[in-house]
Image (tube, rainbow over all chains, first blue to last red; front, side, top):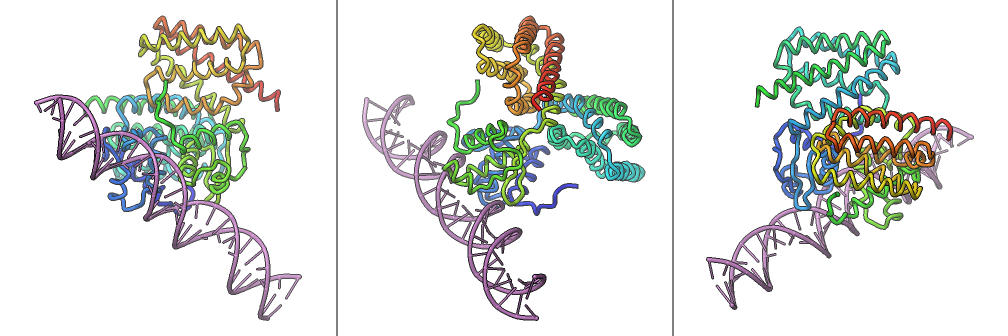
Length: 217
Length: 217
DNA sequence: TTGTGTATAATTGTATACAGCAATACAAAC
DNA sequence: GTTTGTATTGCTGTATACAATTATACACAA
């Protein structure tokens, strides 16, 4: 549940560009000039510049002084992202468990139920979205802004590759089981266990993701 | 060694505001309006807006739609920053050791020599700067952008409190020793050891920082 | 052919103008 | 006195205008 501030053009431009870069629509090496984006997106330079500055801050682009070159997410980046998540996301789960509220319990319960629902229906696209939401929820519920601000952008950056994972039904099964275990630990208030299970879950996801990348080139 | 792009006004505004917020010159809760900053800094709204968007991305301010409220760094943030550094910075040291170059060795050697120099002179202010540079160098030398981009902003955010640490001479001694040990491990190519020592070093720094905060209120 | 100089075009950096929204204050009506 | 309506003010969001810089192309000379 986020803010409902009617998103400005600058926000929309940022979201669109971030998404397009993460999904490779703007491939690594492509040069984005402000004028080109003005024409493509039909907005003026001001909101585009603000979006570019934010993308730069996330190292998705690099300003060359003469257009911004797209950096995107490399395989190495992905490995490092998973390494960081592996080491931090358990901490988020720990704090989320400690700081759990009735509202948080409801949200998590809703998410695991939704997961079961789409699991039955074998709806991979929706399952991926729920997966996203589950991991983001752990971050939000930790109530720790630094941890949240570290992890949530990393989640966004792995979105493209998590979609691929969802095509492996064995992995989908395991993910569901692991999420349910984490859920149980968090609801029962066992913060240490939640931390441990979350770390293991990310480790598994990392291994699977890297194997998948080897196969797909 | 960074880029030499003649910094734009937007960059300067960002640097100034980031620094002032981190050092509490703009205290938590203060409202920054674009107009006020235009008057204070003598530049137009465009570069100010871009700086504000970047500060927002780093969660140092929050846009309320009617001015930006300063968030700054809380004690809780500081704890979490150190937790993250504790878990990631060793990984940076590991990769820095693996990817070490002649140039990197020179830079590190220069830094530990500089550290000894200022240590002899008991120059705390310069020691703090070298401390900054040493930890940033580990990140840069890892050649891993994601790890670097995660840690370097966190270093900036702890700067204010590391200055305080430098007043405890016992801690200054320990820091010097620990840096030297990390340095030796990195130069000798023992990545595992460098990782371990770096993690321990951050743990010690964290403990010391939290103790210091208890005493100082 | 190659090198050099100049004009031109492309692109960013910065400032400013304008519109819209929201809060505030103030006045008038009940 | 309270409430309601309206004008004013302050702020942001967006567009655009202008300046400065860098790359490009082309012409002309060696």
